Amino acid sequence: MREKEFHGAASPAPRQTTRLRLRIPQPADIHFLAELFSRPELVAHRPVPRPDSPEESAARLARDIKHWKEHGFGRWAVETEGALIGFGGVTISRDFDGLNLSYHLQPESWGRGYATELVRESLAFAFDDLHVDREIGLVRSANAASKQVLEKCGFRFEREVMLHDAPTNLYAIDERRI
Image: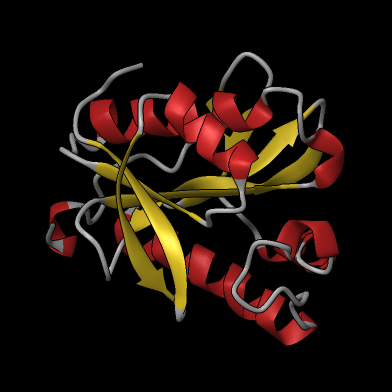
């Protein structure tokens, strides 16, 4: 996939699902993001399961904002009932073929179907608005909940890859199956 295929391909307008409002991340989101990535349960499935430093969180938010500016899409800030609960969406993968779907939601929101709702909206956006042929999701073997969400939304296990020096399951969906 070539990056130029996507430049300016989407509208930065917020999106709404049944329960979620998806908007472009803003610099003011840094406090929530830093707190989110300081949570041990959120970073438990990383190769090195340590929380982000404030500088790492700031760099993460800056990358997400830059992706939006450069490509017209990216990971959204995810809100429900007027409160920010996480970040997620699709970004250009530099390592694998397909747009990379990723999400991080605060642990208090787990088990309520928000991840599935976000993934389904991300798929609809990628296939219907960006007209992509393929999306991928990268999940650590121990992260059973995320594997279940991807499978529920039509992703299929493709192969194991190395990501940040750790084995990771690559799931893919090559057509809209939702």
